[in-house]
Amino acid sequence: MIKEKSSCFQKVLYVIFFVFAFSGQIFPLLTYDPEGVLRFSLGGEVSLLNPILSTDTASSAVEAVIFNGLIKINENLEVVPDLAKSWEVSKDGRIWTFHLRKNVKWHDGHPFTAEDVKFTFDSILNPKVNSVRRGDFIIEGKPIEFKVIDKYTIQAILPKPFAPFLVQMGMGIIPKHLLQGKDINTAEFNRRPIGTGPFIFKEWQAGDHIKVVRNPHYYLGSPLLKEIVYKIIPDENARLVALEAGEIDATGIPPKDYRRMKTAKGIKVFEYDALVYTYLGFNLANPKFADRRVRQALAYATDKNQLVNLIFRGLATPAYAPSAPVSWAYSEDVPKYPYDPEKAKQLLREAGVKNLEFTILVNQGNKEREKAAVILQQQYKKVGVKVNVRVIEWSALLKIINAPKDPKDFEAIIIGWALGLDPDAYSIWHSSQYPKGFNFIKYRNPEVDKLLELGRTTMEKAKRKKIYAKLWKLIAADQPYIFLWYPKAVEGVNDRIGGLSKPGPAGLFLNIEKVYVKK
Image (cartoon, rainbow, N blue to C red; front, side):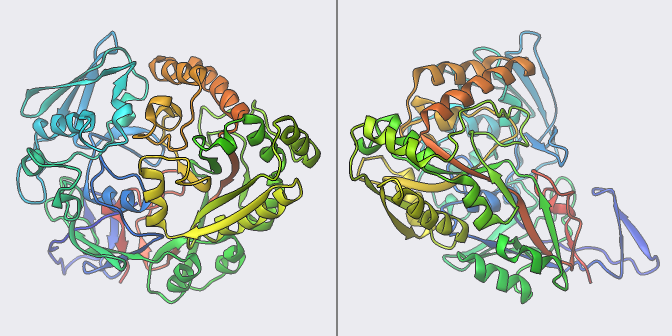
């Protein structure tokens, strides 16, 4: 994910190498271009640019370079300071005190203070604000209280200890002086954001691109890039063509093109594990999927090995649980529903289901999901189930899953989750997170709710791991999703780009202020 801003660099003519103190890296003068422009691709249109409202990866990618949180995650998946320079927690784990940096300004020059932090989290907790992240700051029905101690000190007072709390302080902070008294849901700010990050929003041409420019006053120092352009290219084949033509500098590599791109001139290919899974989700408000035996039958009718082999060619593995193998809370001890068409037919008979027919939605341009839908269509036909495949634009798909739900809104959908560092999955699975959280399928299981609550209020990692192992087993038994695959992240980057982070779940462009274009 990424963003941009603008400024001037002094030119030094008498040395061969120079050091940017803020980056800790040495760059040859002859290879660093202070006018460098980095060009990314987005697989769909951005919905809005406000971190407390957005739900899609395209928006989050751009927000990541415009806004800062109190903390951030480094390339080793460790929590490190961002807008907060330090913090401490009380012995009982309930009171967190954050000490903020004093040299931070909003892009309009206004000072950043503790009032902005309180305003951000109070806004998330405000029921009138359409934030799907509200559940992340409510503990067993009670909201976290944010209290300003002084201009650069803020306290968070928790109803009880809360394991994911520190990671969730990576939420992008929004400016009180620009949004106080306004309807945050419809504010013009969401189209023309002001943040504290390394890049400043410049322009947004709907359906074409978003541009950000370097922030010369960024607290870590002026970024090395002059600007970043996010080009909106929905089709993955078109994105790859753009990469090969030098029109963009980085994009995901489709599995079918992996071997060829590994030897492509001028492009480096990076492969790494990701905190991601892809699934077939069912609208549980629809009577067709109310009986879990129907969902289990479809799971038995799903040949995941065929999916992975035909589509990914070794760049993905079958998925069985709502976690990812790279997560410390991952567990393989779940019902796996091995491919068994006869068992699928038996369960459908037991459920009294005949002539089942439903439509799977997939987003246009994602060839892997489109192929998966067609393969599932063929697999389910073998057990007497008729599947229709409907390919729609990403923006249209987001409207369907974000709108108030109705059994007629959708029947099934192939989509994915990018997971956080902490395994807390409350916003996805807890029954309270329908319809204004990420539980858009209307999943409800009281035992799952209890384990979700216990998992986030238990502080010992070993105990949490056991809780999540039980949780994943329960969810897998219910099959509200058919977990399809864990993809490898495979990204192609133009050779002219330097300063990348080490390949890993945090991404290649984690320290965007250090990324540069070679001369």
